[in-house]
Image (cartoon, rainbow, N blue to C red; front, side, top):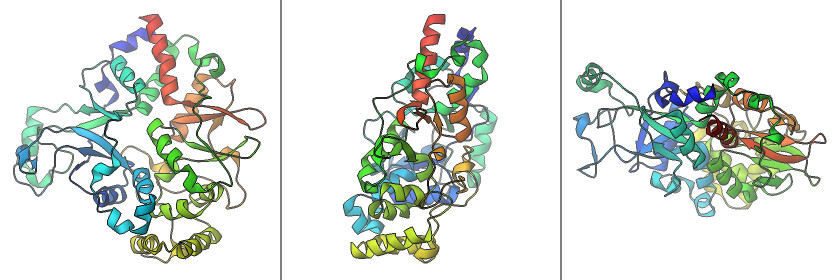
Amino acid sequence: MAVTLLANEVLDLCLGKPALRSLSVTDTVADALCVLKRLGDSYVSVWSCHHSSESGDPTNRSVGGAAVDCRCVGKVCMVDIICFICQPENLLAPAQALQSPISVLIPKSSGLVRHLEPSARLLDAIDLMLEGTQNLVIPIPESKFRKNKLLEEKSSLDSTFHNNCRRYCWLTQEDVIRFLLNSIALFSSTHSEPINSLGVIDAENLLTVNYDDPASSALSLIKESLIHQSSVAIVNPDGQLIGEISPFHLNSCEETVAAAIATLSAGDLMAYIDCGGPPEDLVQLVKERLEEENLTGVLELMEEESGLSLTSWSSFTSTSSDEDGLSSGKNGKHGGYSARVVRRSEATVCYPWSSLVAVMIQALSHRVSYVWVVEEDGSLSGIVTFSGMLKVFREHFKVMA
């Protein structure tokens, strides 16, 4: 019975997950950028406390000389930084903008990140996620011996160990969906029903931009897609899905892709961020337009960060995979399309008659939190997100409880 899943504690879903590295609200955007690029992580957690391996007693770290509780107040990814640099005033002086406090990247009251005890029920986690939470911060249980050993070995302490002698991991919607998929046989025939019969297709909140529209016009949509864990669809005048500007892809880019967003069309940006690096003709176009618009600061930042000329710069990192397993988003190889010929198959798509379990598998296998819904002619008709899937299972739990 599916109701037996309700007995699971969230800790059961966290086994083997790595401890979160942390930054402090007193750190800068540049600090976050450094961590993301050096460690290859997709996200870095931001905390009210401050931790450094060079500090003294790890149980008495503080901000501004006053002891504070260790609370995760948000998370930051490369897309946050890219969108921040894309602001008109920051395009004029990107190096200066990077010295801004990291707090400028964190919504003040979004609730995207929340703490939850490891003994909480799976149902509690799902309810919080349906309220808009993306990441649940879970304490990692450790023995007293382990804690004492960490305290003794101060030289080995890093940003994963907090002043309350605890380390944390986080639980995502993807983790919950994967767990439910592994137990899908308990959900009667729900998993085999077509998504258009389950009310899981969202046709009202689609984020779309025309292929020929300026990429900068999609900036607010990119920010919104990051909050809702969806994507921005690129469509032609007939409403057919051509491709997408996906936060998943952008998260694998260097921060200097902001230059492409500021100067290219949406369609060209889609090609620019795909296939492991920008095509030569688009690189030259970006360079020319940066010079025309006197955005020399962005150009200088690109060359300084890459150590290469603009013509050989790659928009993708090639570091090792991050600890959450998102290696497919870091190697820059997405089997994509050329600068001028794009294929709708690049976006992960399904049909209204696709089964729920098939859509779940698609999303998980592509490591995205959504699947576009298209008709036979390729016209975009909706989107299915992890949040929508969780609603279906939550309703099923109500019936079974």
